[in-house]
Image 1 (spheres, rainbow, N blue to C red):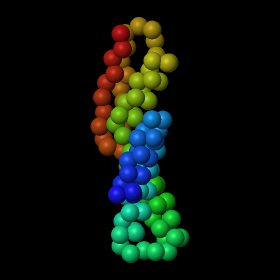
Image 2 (cartoon, rainbow, N blue to C red):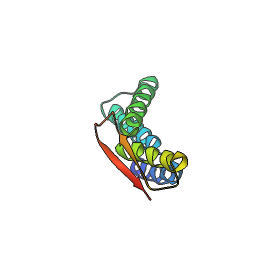
Image 3 (spheres, rainbow, N blue to C red):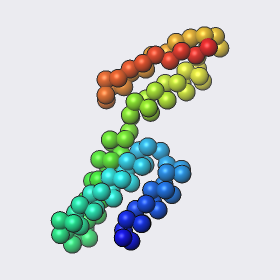
Length: 104
C-alpha cells in the first residue's frame, strides 16, 4: 500500500512541471523496478539497471508523439510565419501521421 501511495504522490508532483518525456521516464522506471522486484531480484545494482532501462524506454515512448510534433510545428509557425493567413504542414516520422496547420 505504501508503494502505491508513493507512486501516486510522485506522479501528481511530477505532472505539475514535467514534460511528456519526463512522465514517460518516471512511469517506465517505476514499472520496470516493480517488475524486477516482483520477479525476486534483490541485487540493488540489478534493480537500478532495471530502473534506468525502464526510464529510457518510457521516455522514448512518450518523446516525439504526434502532440509534441504538432505543437512544435505550431509554435515555430507562430514565431516565424507571416502575419497573414498561412498554412504549415507537419509530419511525424515516428508514427507516419501528418496534418496541416492554418493560422489566420
